Amino acid sequence: MKNQKMYEADDKMISIIKDNYNILQSLGSFGISLGFGDKTVREVCEDQNVDTYTFLAVVNFTINGYRDYDDADRLSIPTLIQYLRASHEYYLGFELPYIRKGLENALDESHNLARLIMKLYDEYAHDIRNHMQYEEKTVFPYVDNLLNNKVTGKYDIETFSKHHTQTDRKLHELKNIIIKYLPSDGLRNNQLSATLYNIYNCEEWLAQHAQVEEEIFIPVIRRLEKRLKQSDVSAKISNMINQGSNAVDPLSDREKDVIVSLVQGMTNKEIADHLCIAINTVITHRRNIARKLQIHSPAGLTIYAIVNNLVDISSVKL
Image 1 (cartoon, rainbow, N blue to C red):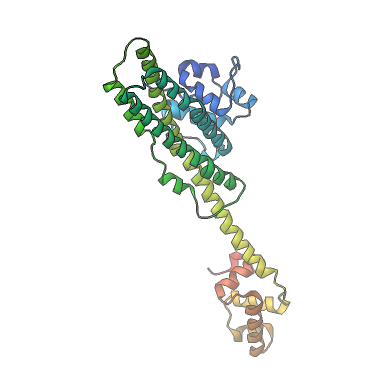
Image 2 (cartoon, rainbow, N blue to C red):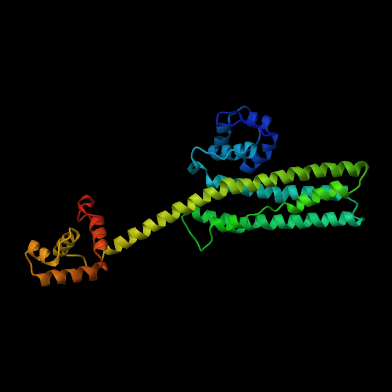
């Protein structure tokens, strides 16, 4: 049964560990070293350069499944990346080799069934290694680019999400085969039981790791992508407007007067009477305005006039 306590920044770090010893592995993934005495979560995180809000979001999610955050924008993407990368290093560099060594010590590989079990485990290890290396080579560099305001190619986090499937099917199968069909005795049986226990823990940890990616990491990156796309659109509009306003051939004062009159809804004759010029002169001014600004529609001229402070938006009939 999960501990239903919602941990907060002022709780003692050691209290969380006492309640949930299995988060010791998470501490390592965040880069938090032991030996922190009776310090609070906030104090430990600040001392070891870990974002407190993100740490608690992951801990409360993995312990109790809490998905609600006061402010999702406060989640630190670099901290999440650090956590996921360190988790990969732990799993690939320690957990997989450790379980394999336990199986080697527990199984008599002169028996065909034992060799098949090792083969099944190696296939699983290969699948999970490929899965995590894909994230290392493709997903994390993509996110690093986003953090540097670089949107590259057509790849997005949705592509990753659609292919982010569970990779522990073979591990589940292996566990069941050992329990159901593999006889053992004496010291080998003790070794096999211990290794089987590690496999169960491994299966649970991998499920939690996948859930953190699905429920925290992927949604946060979606939000980042959305913000960047909005900024990119705004930048393009601003650039387009600036190109018009900074044209090589600037507008004359009379041409600006014509634009203001057009925005106010005047006809060519009304503009001519208002500015005391000939209708043909108004037509020539309009032709020059279109050539200089590359804007031909009344709506486009209205936007130009508002952005360049020729008219106040409150005086424009939209």
